[in-house]
Length: 185
Image (cartoon, rainbow, N blue to C red):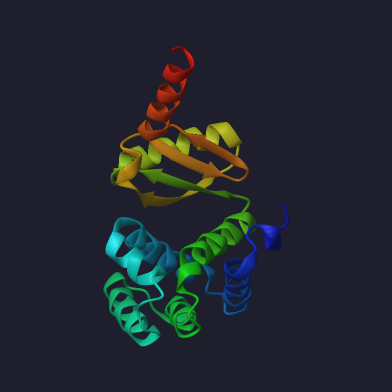
């Protein structure tokens, strides 16, 4: 897959533009680290996710809140300007996808891949390391993890890596059991 085809739409355009600019300014590692920290904050907070995705909030309010959070998370420079631009252009609903797209471009440039991992609660460092090892064994490449917390999956994990999706969530298992029980009656 070509690096510029990893993600499309508004998020893809922003991700590609940021990648080109970060490459030009030799700021890819710092930008990736800063955006990863911000994406983790978004993934762990339903309120922050709502602030970013809701059109009800004014752009100035969103920008103010995100600037304060970015400062707390150590997000500066190109990454901070990227977030501010998306807020000013009312593109924050695409922020998470744009960050994921940027991370996928960075990983692709390094010969790695990005896996999006959804869990019911925050994973420990040891769990993340084990998961990275398992995914590396499966795909034969180094894997960068992008994590999201979604209590509605109840337990287990949902992993999206490239074109592969592994849904081992308790929610899906219960839904499958419900369908199977209806079919045997």
